[in-house]
Image 1 (tube, rainbow, N blue to C red):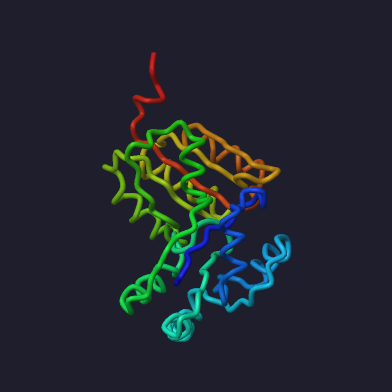
Image 2: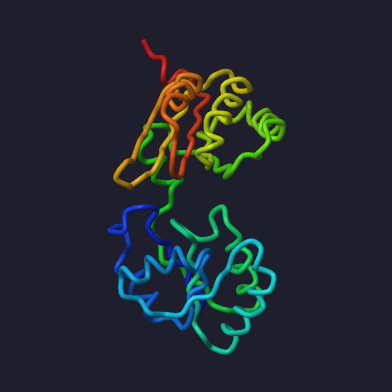
Length: 227
């Protein structure tokens, strides 16, 4: 059995009882970063061995992990935080396991994109997850241009050191739409900031952002400019 195990995105108290139980019971934990996950395992008294599984190791590790699963071993896949296979290479291991007839199940939990949506007050009946925008401004502008007609709420991940530049491109390309930035969600210094893209960008120019960042964009301005 391959278990897709969600872990907290910041607050360790968000770890589920089932996640702890599964991580204690499996034969091996495949982790995005074994050192990072090691802190989590130590906190919950989990002594299951780990192996690394990340973008640059996946080709070699997939064959190894699938081999263990075919032998009848159980493996848990975890990312650094949140739900594995969401904006990380874990989906490839899931696909490879299914192709081999190996049973896959999920242990649900935190996901930064869903947490941000629930906090936003933006329409959530329909939304689109875009993950990370391209790192270079030219690539970001091209992708944002393709999103100009998108009426669904747009969910993005971004690194803190690119946040101000990304918000600037969002303002320029999309006509300064309403945005929400969620930073350090569920952690002690959680910050949620809403407004038009330029004003939110100015806020983070004066307060250098740190930690994980989620950006939500709504181009339905009638929702934010009612009389």
